[in-house]
Image (cartoon, rainbow, N blue to C red):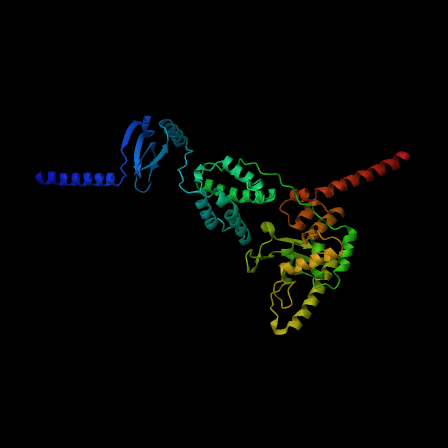
Length: 429
């Protein structure tokens, strides 16, 4: 018994010494317990602490979240507030969510910390170029302005204010962003926050309720028939003559036509299969690589005989390039290549195209407008929208209609005029 008492006293003395030590360092926190929630709903206490010689008082609520499946011990959480009433209200909300099964454990991450995790671990399923753009949007716009906010404290109003300031910055030295750019930023941020919802860090996605600025679509500049004729005349003898003509008569995207391989073309049956596109890493000194076409959809095109003939001419031309290059030739199987068989530069093709368009008086025309010209020609020739959609590789026919609705509208007006002529012709009888 004597040994037990001595042991008890020595432990008590040690505990008292630790308390005095903590007090001397100014970290002692006397706690005044003020009440317990009914039915084990939690407890609230008033806490007074001294830091750097200054006394602070606040209220803390504690509740049991559940049980650790590994140890069987209770998992306890705490919340704080300036007043007892504030903490009591928070506790009521938490216990209600625990009861109805909607409770989410508090997340200590900041928005910036979560975005770092998301860009590192959750972009494995997207294209490298897409992941690069996502990371740039996070790095340039989202993280600098919202990164320090606690993830669970982020709300729709804060995000909305962020979007508004991007469009209309208060600092005159900051350039406003276009509505399309803000929409892209929102798309990235929404995906990141939705992932936080899926894994339980957030109950709702705070970006869902935001109103985005209206995006004004860029005006298309498909070539008129006289411009097509002038273009075809101007490119005669150009190093990229067959490339431009095939792009005009197939509607292929620039990356798709640069990524074409001879194994993708059945010249005997006039079938072209679009399986990939040539891309370049969006960074200084970026390397070329192949990826799936846009929307990750392979498609087949039936080629007009004149287009098949253009491919045969390109094959003859490339055979001459191969002989001229000799040992320097790199066989990549590409339909369109540089002088030694390597990748043909986007910039080379585009700059040459712009010089030609300037000569024929259409400097605003982009390479992509060859694709628009093809689509408009198909629709005006009577192709149904579903066929045009499949040839262009659009995800849906509705998207094709949305892009080229003005063409079909004009066709409907022309149809009405033809009907009027018919009515007039039969009415005279």
